[in-house]
Amino acid sequence: MSVIYILWLREVKKYLRSRVQIVASLGSPLMYLAVLGFGLGPVFQRAGEGKYIQFMAPGVIGMTVLFTSMFSGIAMLWDRQFGFLKETLVAPVPRLLIMIGRTLGGATVAVLQGALIFVVTLIVGFRPASLLAVPLAFLVIALIAVIFSALATAIGSSIKEMQGFQMVMNFLVMPLFFLSGAIYPLEGLPKVLAAFTRVDPLTYGVDGVRGVLIGRTHFGVPLDIAVLLGVGILFVMFGAWRFSKLEA
Amino acid sequence: MSDRAIIRVQHVVKSFGKVTAVNDASFEVRAGEIFAFLGPNGAGKTTTIKMLTTLLRPTSGTLELDGLDPTQHQNEVRRRFGVVFQDPSLDSELTAWENLDIHGVLYHVPRHIRRERSETLLKMFELWDRRDDLVKTFSGGMKRRLEIARGLLHTPKVLFLDEPTLGLDPQSRNQMWTLVGNLNRAEGVTVFLTTHYMDEADRVAGRIAVIDHGRIVAIGSSAELKQQTGADSLEAAFLKLTGTTIRDESATAADQMRQVSRVWRR
Image (tube, rainbow over all chains, first blue to last red; front, side, top):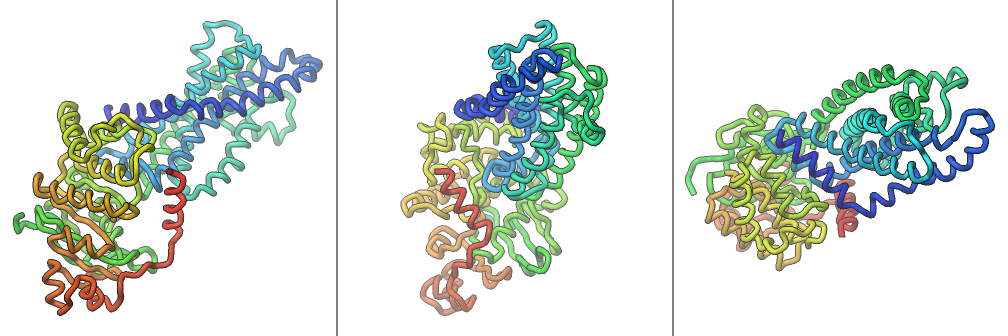
């Protein structure tokens, strides 16, 4: 337990210390909120869908959690060649504990970052249906964070070069975000696109957060949570397996 | 120093595909001695260390550290050694104290011993005043010292140092060898180091193994090597043994990344 705790604490400490990075990481969600939120707002309203900021705020929170989680994969690549990872790999502790500590740390950081963006959305006019829903929403957010932190661990363990991560960003992270229904409703999509959105775990995450916070959901919150739990278990196992195969 | 072998390597071969990094190496390291692996870049020094430290499995041959096989008893073996890798493995976003503390937890060192020993080591390595500063503010020499201190926190029997003075200025190098020598005398820890600086091997090591192209060419004290070859300096002895001077191999991709990371870390 102490091994998991100390590695978790390491990630959280580093996050809280990197003030500049925290501010910088608010950039892209803010841009989405401000530019897309206010830019597409009138069209959305005219289509009879209500206030766009209400709709997209949960999506932007989901996006933030996705990006932050996946970034811990980059950190791992760097750590691996020139950093701390080797130190943990020769320590007399099971790899599984190391993987869990790192992944939980990365996930916690992602949740904290999500909380920060949640506050920002409140400032720009987002209003959850009730404050009581907020803790439940964070439970869903935590699930999203664990899923993608575990995926990042798996990817960080599998590729060796920084260039590889660029590819992951372009061909995995961006599609995960754009296919998730974070910025558009899932109703009435062309069949092919609809099929793609359904295999994206983030879709269920965003739908769950949205369902809990504003009562608008495509799949229903119970199904969202069930899918997230299932995928979470699967990804953590996958991440642990890839991490155990890692060669220093 | 005793005559007991703490490391025993017999007929070890390690190949990566078609490349044979270590070719039928056999040697012993005695408990309490300072043992140096001397050879050019790419000779197989790091690969040997990686095998002894459980990070790589040999293709064939047997290894033993304190009577245990690193491929069989990974965790027991890991508890028995400390290692300083060629590339830094500190967390530069954490303080010196935090780096030691994490290490202590990973090696199951009880809290009060962890604190006591961290204090002793930081004072010994002249880092006590900087214990609460982030490692990224440290100089190259300070970082290297901190890594050695960390490697010793769990009181290992063997300390592996892979090119510990690479990239350090002469003053820091000098200071480091004095410290390592003191430590070896004070704690009786066996030191296994690799270097391609002949003067360092000559100065600190009790015995030296000359390695080239994955083969161990000769083993002995500096005096023995000189005598064996009839040379008057270790450098000349090396030349006779390997037929070459220590050469700088062309840079590999890893070397280039190392270069980039040094610039980044400034």
